[in-house]
Image 1 (cartoon, rainbow, N blue to C red):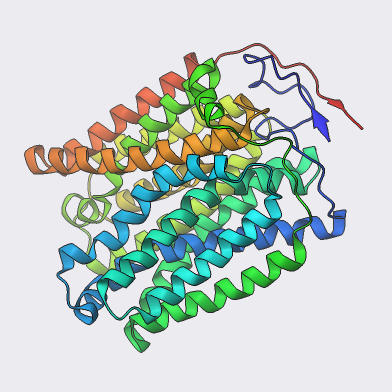
Image 2: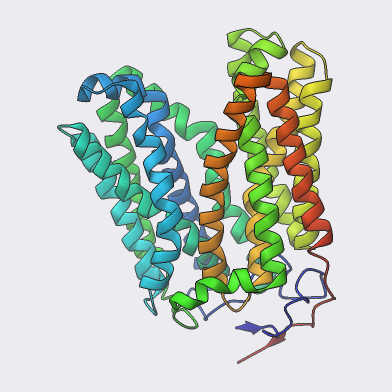
Length: 422
């Protein structure tokens, strides 16, 4: 395994040789051979795809589910909000509860829990059962984002870790482009229960693949409750959390109103908006792999580039005029930028806390979920009071603040070159 000076808190954000910047040193040696490593990473990545698709599937099926379970649309909306709320607490809690458990066991258990959640949702006789299924999903979301990036870095050698993390996070972009629309399509043709059954079937396949492909992945040490405070005590991790909260708040203050922006400000038709939303997802898929290349050189550059492009895209939305060309330019830039967000945030935290990657990821889960809820709320108030354009400007200002935090608070010395340990 590789090792980096654990006391060099300021020495983690400039490239100086392996391990690749943007990745954490491998916590413990994996037993996978080189030929088996990438299929194992792919099994984790497809798990990401299924999880995110399941998380947002009710958005496209909400009215049908509400009617089927005899609740109002407003009550049915709890299917989307409750998993996120629970995930904010589940990430830190599960990182401590997992202790020294083999991370292979943890990942397989989380995928099995996702399977149970899907089956419960598909068979739910009432809304209480459905909500219980969605709360189980919240545990999966929080746990998965806490452990998956670290698992990816354990599976491959140091020089390939940035690529492995990008592959795992690519599941988010793919689910945005294909997963959520596919779930809605299945629901419209065969009913919402069939959509959850289909998700359960795919989850079962992923579970088998992870069981067969993941090697033993012992952690270097157990995470203790007090370790969860570590990200708040280190300058670089604090800077990253500040930047991430501002960035995600700014994005969701604006993104929540992307559809009405395209309809009302850019004067596009409903068909054109649908096409551009697909373009947005595809652009995010490209951005996900682009950030892997950037973070492999410098985690600070990755976060600065991400926030810079996102701020520009939001400003463009207020200045580009109207029409399809202008709308497409904004959507492309915005989609690429947001596709870079997960990799940029994860890369920063893995670099800032190489000795405690799971504690850093757990705190990121919480920061993301709090920022999403806060950003959407702020955006809603601004839209109601001043209009959609004002929400875009608010988002741009928050993201610009994130870029400033990453560029200034995140400055550090060049890292010591890693050494190989037997």
